[in-house]
Image (tube, rainbow, N blue to C red; front, side, top):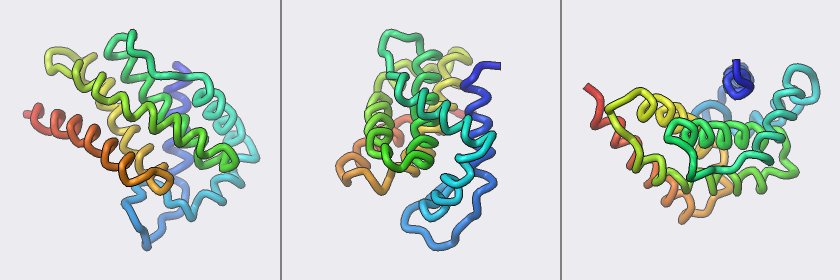
Length: 169
């Protein structure tokens, strides 16, 4: 099983076990910023320490690559935003670096959008996973984005979401 699949599964486990809060200023789809300190404490011990280390390594070493296939672009997007989101939460000293890397990756959605096609699995499923992870990542970095950045990213994701919605039977 590829490391990214293991990481992705771990990412969800980490967040699903965090407490849910009822007062929110934006959706906070999986984790609320008030939960970060608990998650940061957990990241000091195994297995969360290893997840933190892998997330930081991935976000620092992965870059969006226009030359990749639609499948690989989508997986790269997924890996950047997923790793970046976890690093953003667990390593607050460097969170603005992670926010910038996530933001920059999300700005590449037009490239993936232009390659969406209902003709094959590769042009639907990998972009769908990247879209899901991108939505969660936006939710996590939301409060550190400018209104302009939020609008730009939301418009890109809305365009992709509308494509998926209009291409389902």
